[in-house]
Image: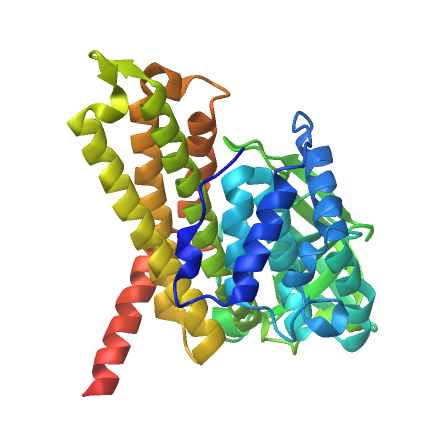
Length: 391
């Protein structure tokens, strides 16, 4: 699939290395042919291929095989946008390596990081982030899973829900309640749990409209050593939020990738579709729809790369701009793709068509890593905070 040149990479948010990375990823992913009939096998293949090509090195810090000392938002976003424009599962495989290992990179012991992070970067080990529970999704501090002290370690009991890479991961960064006598967000601790730990099992495989490995996990008396703790006891909620903050903007970038592919498909179809003695592209209404799609796409990309650049170049607090990017890009991408389906007419809803796949692929992005409603709350709070500080 040949996509038009990504002229947005000429924006001042980027450096030449980002343009080179985008070009390298686009050329590489166009040569990949991984059957997705077996989603678990396909995801494993994508992880291995991304690792062999060196792209997973952008998902871990340099001391453990990464490209840069700290994970860079713009590189993550360029990678995710480019992969998403070609294949949703390729984007998923890349993203989950970063998110799954993020808490380990931030707060794991030197021994744990040395054991696992190089394998994440090479694609030898698959990572997973296990925060959500059946009754704790948007309210992430409401965890019921317990971790109780044992001699030299911890015993984990409970369930985790909606866990990406559930069932195929080699390790899970798990968050559990260790103290019930303090405020909910203050009594949570993070742990690294290898997939081979006795008492850990896949309780349910979850099928969703855009297939990828997803599961409900049960922890029945899983005992792990204290050395597998991620950060200090009680700091797990803050660690989970720091991890999500790093990768939230990259969700927006994936949405931009899906939307960019949808616009490309819509233009290609409109140019070829005969209608009223001309083409669909010659019809003024179709031109207006394409104009709206292009405008929304640039708005989504600007929000996304402004947030990524601000985190990389300026540092400091980026909660508000990251939430704006995640909210704006995912909502706009949904609209762009819906318009692409509409322009395709009956072909747009035929199973197997690219725009039909994109319609399914984009929908979850408005929910995971912070639903749109949660992002609106974050933006509102950050707007109030900034206004009060400016008085």
